[in-house]
Length: 417
Image (tube, rainbow, N blue to C red):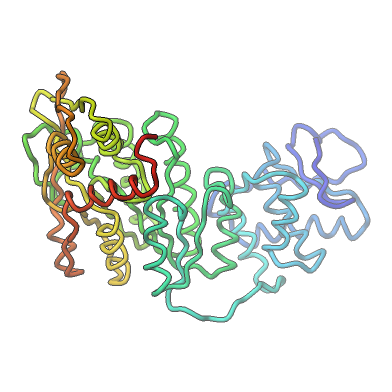
């Protein structure tokens, strides 16, 4: 199947066209579908196609599957033939072929081969840091954006605007168009505890990292305390030197993500900042779920059921969204790199959270528990390292944060939902 970009220029898989008469085939299977193609070899393929197009011959550029190398070379051909920028040409290619699985490393080689032939779009310099935020409409992104916009030129990106799994080319084009020099990666699958979500999260991160690598820009990544969730303890104070030991899909995903980030950091010399956050709560999210469930049950004066593990009631280091946002923004302003923990260092049991809620609502609910034949991690996060750099400690007490949630529910009339 040939996908025609113009009347005379198309792309295809080799097996579909190698025996068709009346077309000239530019075979690009000898290029690698990753970084490393020499600009002069890429330019030779482009020139070969252009030479036959000038003779009014129909030209089909072929690779193994007709997805990446063929469309990348076609981008260069179209840019020269129709006097387009590379960005304009790739948009035309994707629109005509419907193909988005083009490796940005191959496109980068095309750009390098045509530096003297194609005029690229340039924008005036305005801000010292131009920041792209993925997952910008989420709980954390929504809280962070107002703080970040006072310091940076921010491009906020949501899943409705760009699919980070399928549209890495569009991400690369956006980064180049906006002259982005740092990405804050907050995007996660909406449901993030399934095996499928692990694959999606890693694909999204891999695409973001590839864009960071090719554009030589910084990555800031929000990781999680759950990389320590495999430890069994009555209460463990986790510093950055504690060996990751995740348990469960989400913790394993965050650990694998950190490994991938370190791999790119070492191989491609990109600057990275990893922030491991303790559980975040506050207005704008229904997580952690147990807090919101407890509030609704207490309001209805029904029993609140907690869990009791083999090592007792689970204890969490709960950090309010306002404190997390302040810490993340300060860490970015200070241009930190490396790995840092974010939390309060204070453990609060789920049973105590229930007691706070009952007291605030003057509820008649009783607290009962189900026994769980497993261990709770009970991790308190040590943020001594980052505190020395940003001079900030979390300020919002759990009781105050829960009262804020209760007042919100009552004012909105949503507490019975």
